[in-house]
Amino acid sequence: MFFFNENSWMAGAIILIFRYFLIAGTAYFIFYIWKKKKLSHLKIQQKFPEGKQLRNEILFSFLTLLIYSGTSGIVLYWYKKGITKIYHDVNDYGFFYLLGSVLFMIVLHDTYFYWTHKLLHSSKWLFKFHKIHHQSHNPTPWAAFAFHPAEALISLGIIPLIIFIIPTHPLALVMFLSFMTIYNVLIHLGYEIISKKKSNLSIWKWQNTSKNHDLHHEIGGGFNYGLYFSFWDRMMGSYKENQN
Image 1 (cartoon, helix red, strand yellow):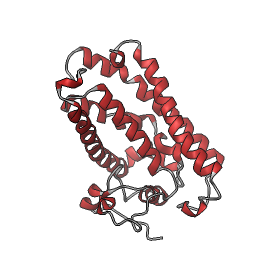
Image 2 (cartoon, helix red, strand yellow):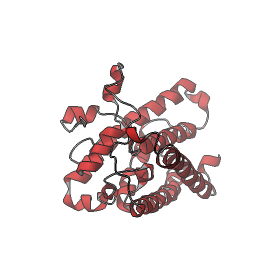
Image 3 (tube, one colour):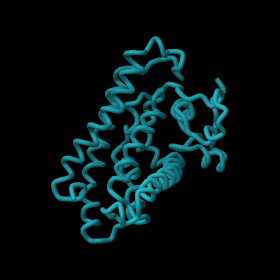
Image 4 (cartoon, one colour):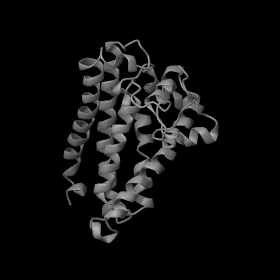
């Protein structure tokens, strides 16, 4: 199976890096170059970041992606030992289970992200690693994976949780990781493209938006630790909404 063989890690690294540069690069090109003036009214912080910040974001994101791809060998080892719940035949659980498992991964990841993110802010020692990410007070799409290597390893903890807890098809994992990449770029966009105030859909109340996360970067933490949703922040009293 291509997803889990000794020669797949290099292809995985190329795909991972290509996907990131495609998604983040497209978002950056549209909002920071091509439509910069036309969409300037949607910019959350009117000041645009300097070149040094962009270089740091790309450098640390690239390093993070190398770490992500390098750990595929560990997943391969666990898989070959038969201790994971990875399966290959979609018919074993059905197509609807496959889609449902992706939704479960998203909810599980949001929970994992909230508590590990909050821990990184609660410990002075751990924040020494996390402050690399917070160098981007005015984030751009390139900041999505701009982590210290230690934080990159912490963020990887969601993968063993998934493959040890629920039956996981490789396609579902790819779908989840692709969605995670897109959403990570979205909340670091620096532009408000979804306004809760303008929406009558109550579901948006629970969505974590670029404006929520931009505020987290701007004030240096303390609020809005979630990734996809805001319900953990609301439940734990760490939700803050920018009223501007």
